[in-house]
Image (cartoon, rainbow over all chains, first blue to last red):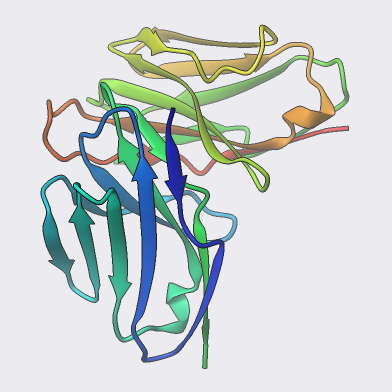
Length: 109
Length: 116
């Protein structure tokens, strides 16, 4: 079966750095995605990792260790608009994505 | 491009009624996905199509749920009869087929379904 774990909630301060972790145990692995979802809106794509290492994209970076079944999303210079849910998703067979439960991030002034 | 289009955006219906949700994927995308999102269960894949053909419907909860894709630009998700536990936000998403490369799924705005 598949199991994707992320913390349910996190709180951080504006301007700070926050790391959201994701661990997974899946029957197949063809890449890991991070999506951002603001309340009442659709998920939007943030990043994709298929090889081990760090992918940087502006204030957001994503890391993957396939041997450990582990990924994290790093958000720097936090802004109030970063308050949202962050969804970790694993691409298994075909083009299917299996999503974790999401981490709700609250950024405080 | 207008993105993925879903209708209706909100649907309130009574238990036992038939509900039909509609989706228009992004033009040129050959994959279409139907998801359901609830607080309890998060975002769950219900079914997905490739080139209008259903590939995996193992996420469809019961026979009350059915999905069709009669052509490349239109798909429906039908619930009959609907039950209060079907209340959720239903998302449609589409993507290109890029083999094993990176791709992203583009989500529609969702349909918020409430069954009373």
